[in-house]
Length: 309
Ligand code: BTN
Image (cartoon, rainbow, N blue to C red; front, side, top):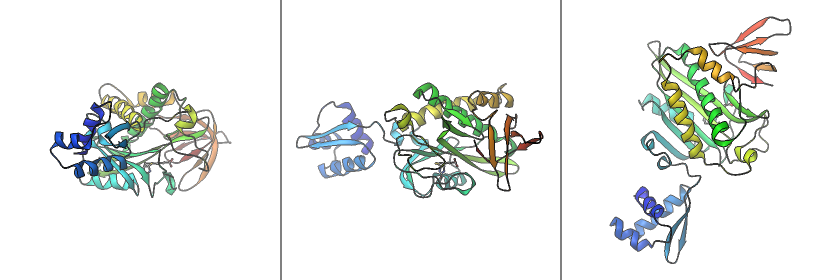
């Protein structure tokens, strides 16, 4: 019903009375009023005047209807603990490839290495569930494709000079714009699902976040549409990962990613679950591992960790 009311409001450039809407839909005016209230809670700005209702703004609403063609695979919540937890439950229950769980706010947003991820209103917080038919050792490709696709979307569609930081974050002028986290389950030595969790500072306030963060709004001086960003990212990710296995190779995925890399050549500190090491980020190999040149000249291959400039 909400969707139908929204379509009616969108088709009008002027105020339409509750009575007219209830006639068109064959429901009571109270029911129309309740659904309009619900749309307001979803973020649609609807003016309520003595003559009726008018849609004022649907620019930054995260709802499945903002994703034509993907409505059934995008699940939007106003507030949940972590999109990672909800996505894991949905993946275990068998939801399809390319399902998305998004939230306006997360009470228990998680970062890598057990850190919390501040998830205030205005940011884009989502987990993408994918089901590639590959062994677990190759799953890193999809994380690299995700950070590449998002960096390219930010650069080409939003004019933001986004750089990727190993393993999968996105920074602008060394301030964090995007964090990425992935979880995987396997069955019979094959991937059952990979969940890629992504947090983007879009229109949220990043003051006080550590390490220093930045939002798209701060960078561009205006609010951006989270639905537009998510939709453009999903299109790029789907297209790029659809080419995997059709003559495309591992080298290409990592080399595409490296074109946006701000990590290679820099002095970095790497924190893993077991240790902290420093050196120069010499390269990222075809398996996605960071090759760290230690101060004694030896190269250490780092498979997973957090990287600080
Ligand atoms: C990091 O940089 O440490 C990774 C941050 C990942 C944050 C995202 S927000 C959406 C998804 N849900 C979570 O709880 N975490 C990820």
